[in-house]
Length: 351
Image 1 (tube, rainbow, N blue to C red):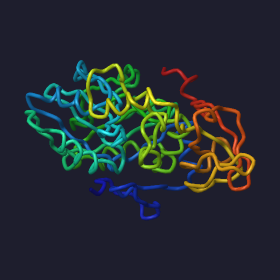
Image 2: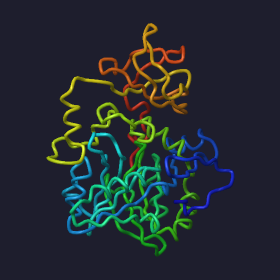
Image 3: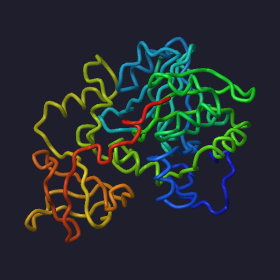
Image 4: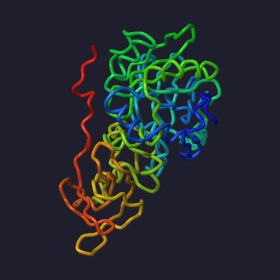
């Protein structure tokens, strides 16, 4: 589905799975700096919004989500993984509590695969799954001063909402769903707005914050070790990815639980660890020690904040520690402890 927001012809576009997105509006440096130093506005219309409703909505959500949502109220949201029976990641989602069920926000580009998976899990349950992406769209505000934009644009009281709070409110007479949640480690807010009104609200937000594209968003997510599903998942389970913090293994049942439990109990296999290097090696590049291949590069980009390459390696568990040096593309790659950048928001109060 195309974005309801009109972006400049100069914007550089690309694809993430099923979605066409703006990769950059100006330069990566400028957009990344807005996220880390000021405030950025991001078009998330490449994410689908799927409604779960019906008498068995909660039971169904408990079945398909790897975290416990039994007591998720209409004033809260949370992040979870959705897994298949083999424990592999279908998607990372944000679940918005609603009085009549839940809204599930897919990752950018991941909505089609997610919806197909959910439809296959309904079985005999009394559940209605509705893709609401044709009615509503999402954008976000991220940055250490994003709260100021929220105050000027919508309501100053919303800026200081507790993390993962959700509010039904209005902007210029338009009903919107507002949440304090983000993905970069900076102050983050999301707005779900009717598609017909999205351009007007986007223009108002873009007058207060710098538009940033997918490249800057993914770099900032990587720096605080938020999973990038379309780069990392594939045939890697949640332990290999290092995404087990998004799974409630104490939860009695969910799709993929048995596989995750088996992975916990099995001998340690491959693990993912961050690294920095002088270059930006391609995914799949061999990681070696004294000429012996011990792993491979999962994903790497140039980090504006570090001024070097930054990425993820997949190596045996006993080598997935910070401070080790491997050889990648004939250059040194040094492993890191996450987060790889300290977000400015951690030391910036909301006033």
